[in-house]
Amino acid sequence: MGIKILGTGSYAPKRILTNADLEKIVDTSDEWIRTRTGIEERHIAADNETASDMAEKAANNALDMAGISVDEIDLIILATVSGDRPFPSTACILQKKIKAKNAVCFDVQAACSGFLFGIEIINSMMNSNPNFKKALVIGVEKITYLTDWKDRNTCILFGDGAGAMVLEHKDGASGVIASKIATDGTYTDILEVPAGGSAKPIDEKVLEERSQYIRMQGQEVFKLAVTSMVNASKEVLEQAGMEASDIRWLVPHQANLRIIKAVGKRLGLTEENVYINVNKYGNTSAASIPIAVDELVRAGKIERGEYLLLTAFGAGLTWGASLIQW
Ligand code: UT7
Image (cartoon, rainbow, N blue to C red):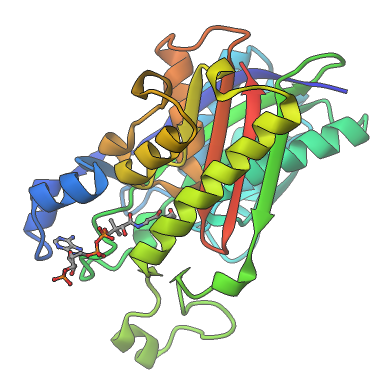
C-alpha cells in the first residue's frame, strides 16, 4: 500500500483579462472585485483552445518533471465541468493527444472538488488493483465558456487553466496520507448551469433566459464553502493523527480570498502557510488546486517530505480534503 507523487504540471492560457477590462464589460469596479474576491486578473482560453489542449500541456509538463515515458501511464482521471464535448470523455481525447496508449481513461465531474475526487479514486484503484502502477490526475477547465459575460455577480470570478499530477503506486510510500470526499445533493440549485443538459436542452427560450450559463447564490455558497472545507480538513488531520502545525502549506480551492483566509484562520494557520494565487487566476474550478501545487513545487516553496493539506468545495455540493506528502 502506498502512493508516491512523481511530478506536477500546469498550464494557463496566454490571454489575460484584468479587472480594468471587466469594468468595460459590466457595471463593476477593480476596487469591488479586489475587496470582495481578491481577484486581480484571470486567464481566458482562446476560442480555438480546448480543455483537452490545456490538459495536454499540463500533463506533458507533469510527465517531464516525473521523468517517465507516457507509455508507463496506465490510468488517467480527468476532472472537469467544461470538457470538449458531451462525449467521448475529455480524458479519452487527451489520451489520443498525448498517445497514452496503455492507459484507461475517464472523466470525473465533481465541479471545483474534481481534482480531489480524482486523487481519492486513483488512491483506491492503485491500492486495490496491481494493474495500475502509474497514473495521471488532471483538473482542467475552459469554464469561461459557461460564464455569462452580462452577469456581474459571476463573470468576474472565473478563469481557465489546467493542472496535473503523476502518481505512482509504491509500497510504503506516503504520498496520499489521508483523504475525505463528500457530497450533498440537496443544494443542487445554489450553484448550477440550469440548461444545456438533457433536462433542458438549449433552445431559443434558454438562450433568451441565458440559462446555459453559471448561476450562483454567492453568499449561501460562501458560508457552506468555509464550513465544509474546515471540517473536511480537520477530519483528514485527525485521520492522520496530525496537527495543522505539521502542515507546510494549506492549499485551499482558489475561489475567493475571503474564503481562503477564513479557512486558514479557522484551522489556526498563519498566512505563511496558506497558499494564495486567486489574484492571478480567479476561480479555475477543478484546475485550481493542481495549478497551485505545481506553482509551489516549481518555485521551490515545498521540500520533498513536507506536507500539503488540499481542500476544495464546489457545485453539487461537493467537497473534500487530501493530506499529501510531496
Ligand atoms: O467555486 C465554487 C465556490 N464558489 C465560491 O466559493 C464563491 C462564493 N461566493 C463569493 O465568493 C461571494 O459571495 C461573491 C464574490 C460571489 C459575492 O460577494 P458578496 O460579498 O457575497 O456580495 P453580494 O452578492 O452580497 O453582493 C453585494 C453587493 C450587491 O449590491 P446591493 O444589493 O448590496 O446593492 C451586488 O449587487 O454587490 C453587488 N455586486 C457587485 N458590485 C460591483 C455583485 N457583484 C458585483 C460586481 N461589481 N461584480
